[in-house]
Image: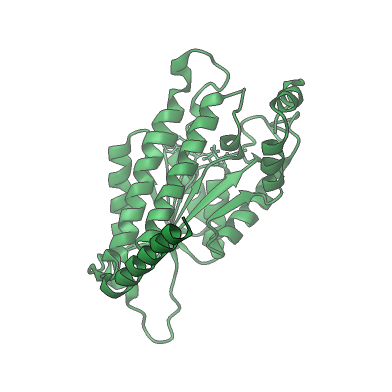
Length: 300
Ligand SMILES: NC(=O)c1ccc[n+]([C@@H]2O[C@H](COP(=O)([O-])OP(=O)(O)OC[C@H]3O[C@@H](n4cnc5c(N)ncnc54)[C@H](OP(=O)(O)O)[C@@H]3O)[C@@H](O)[C@H]2O)c1
């Protein structure tokens, strides 16, 4: 038996060594950059970083767009409510590009993304914050009332994730950031489909990240895992989740997200303490979990 394992180990070692010797450089590094101007840096000139934020008209996407603009980024922002994007542009008009995008229409959305990247002559960072959560009725039991979650978070976001990674492969580098949720890590009774689509995104991002690692592509993929973030005063006022155990402020969330971006973290809880909650929920019995959640307004 031991001999058998040793033989397998030896075969793996030889195969890995063979890969090292014969491995061709990753396609991304062989490919001619689609955006030759990206690498043109004049002496003494600082490189301006470029980012696209999809879903920047409200919430964390909106706050992050403002933060990146303040940090000196050139930022392309997209959403359906372009009037709200105009408000962001007012502060840094020269550094802000606005595009209408409906993520529920993947073919159109992908075209807008490709065109915006071309207009910006390449990007360093793409953040996908869109979700169909507020276009659906979370508690409705008729199957069709939750459909925006499938249209936006599954079909639309997965198409944009794949497109952004393809763009980064062509460029030779890039950083993709996408939101899942702590709700993807347990079954949310209040909106089971939301848990399902967020876990779909989490696994999808894991798979895309593993592909980049295995192909040695210089692409970073960050999964942001927020708990409750008080990100939308228009949905529920200043205290949208009175029964929730931990609610994060938008400022704390934005700080955590920016740190995850600068550190190129593969996964980041928003905020960090939410990781403890997810770990705890994995260990408690289901009966206890349901009892805690069943109290009026009870939610994690
Ligand atoms: N806030 C939380 O407590 C929380 C918790 C866990 C996870 N998350 C996740 O974190 C991300 C950001 O959430 P948030 O609460 O900060 O923001 P939010 O206010 O829900 O904003 C989401 C953004 O998505 C855009 N969007 C929605 N449907 C779209 C569509 N069909 N096409 C294009 N854009 C669309 C909205 O723009 P338009 O409506 O203008 O198009 C908006 O800019 C989401 O993925 C959410 O699921 C949030």
